[in-house]
Figure 1 (cartoon, helix red, strand yellow):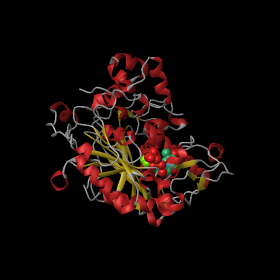
Figure 2 (cartoon, protein in one colour):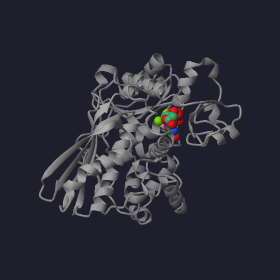
Figure 3 (cartoon, protein in one colour):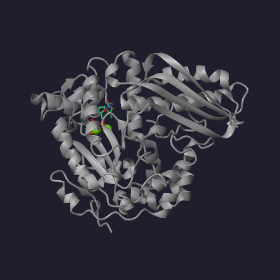
Figure 4 (cartoon, rainbow, N blue to C red):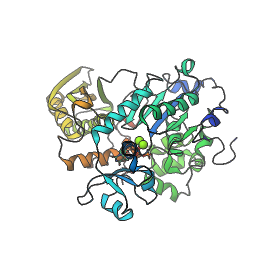
Amino acid sequence: MVGGPEGNVLASRRPPRVALSAVRPCPLASRDSARHNPHMTPGRLCIIHVDLDAFFASVEQRDRPELRGKPVIIGGDIKSRGVVSTCSYEARKFGVHSAMPTRTAHQLCPQGIFLPVDGAKYQRVSREVMTVFRRFTPAVEQVSIDEAFLDVAGSERLFGSAPEIAARLKREVVETTGLTVSVGVGTNKLIAKVGSDLRKPDGLVVVQPGDEAAFLAPLEIRRLWGIGPKTAERLHGLGISTIGELAALPIETLARALGDHGATLHDRALGIDFDPVTGGGEAAKSVSHETTFAVDVMDIAEIERTLLALTEGVSARLRAAGIRAGTVVVKIRDSQFRTVTRQKHLSEPSDLTDTIWRAALELARPEVRGKKIRLLGVSATQLGAPEQISMFEVVDAKQRAVVDATDAVRRRFGDAAVTRGSLLHRGLPAPFERDPASAVEGRVGVPKIEDDVE
Ligand code: TTP
Ligand code: MG
Ligand code: MG
């Protein structure tokens, strides 16, 4: 049983051996969890989440020793209306943070060293770091420029237990790139992600199988995936401030307050998460999202909005991976189960929602007219190697700033947090991948969760 907030958290800066001494053998997978998702290995301590510390700023401090120990702020120009991409931990003491207007950052920290974003350099470093991760397992799912989930279930005979792998990985990232990472180790992605964020910078947090709910219990509700400011406000209104209090609330009360999202949050508050680590060594050849309607749809406007939601998911993943697509493919299945796919080459590779959506609409329109549609899918293929395409040019700076800000919200609060105006209050299916049968949010009629938009 866990006594206090830190009771079962094995957090250590250096040396991580402290954490390793307390590792217990993995229990067998629970049958109940296996029924939910046969592809994962529930109950095993094999999921690792890694996130670089103050990534862009740390790269600059690494490359320019005179910046070390100083408040370094990476972002747009102070004079224009730029925003802060990130800042060093020294600058965070002044209250500076990502997405803050650079001008505000300058007021808070006039002695800060302001530097522009060097996107191409950070992409290069990101690839080096991901290559280090792949030394330990082919199952690496990169989720943004500086973070990834690893499933090390198959690597233990070669490299030791998951916490041992985590400690070794931290060392090898420093040796290879000169940068520190924070790592969470747990039985699932939710726990690993919360863990990696808890002891930044240079943290290592191991949550033992069976300790998930107790690990989360003392933490602030905002640390949980899917709880943004508005959901937090509503929960505070119910007298809930910790994840443990949230888990103790009857599901019916939560569902009344938050709808279907309430039930999902209840599971998460208990540390339940069945999302498998995707990605298997080879570079992805395509990124796709698809959805099956609960009731076949003829309404063109609804079809278009759904294509937009799917495209948002696809393009956000492209941007997170720093790649662009040369070809857009739509998949359409009608009520008779006839499936067609149509594809279009883009004049220039893109990772932008608007460009990909326009192509998807053009492809889909002639195919959906007068039909009852059961399934829609959007894929991006012919993915361009990042070094062939610079990350920040091509699109005008304003459009890129909007895209980056949207991605930042998504990174922090999850996909559902960012919804275009035309999607709000429509009960549209959220885009999903993997297993349509189990993705409750993927069915029409389930309200989208837009209450986390700030
Ligand atoms: P994060 O991992 O969110 O932040 P970080 O690595 O700078 O700091 P932390 O130690 O808290 O992890 O994001 C990774 C990089 O992505 C970050 O260095 C810069 C970029 N980024 C933006 O450009 N804008 C944003 O709003 C955020 C959050 C990140
Ligand atoms: Mg980071
Ligand atoms: Mg990150």
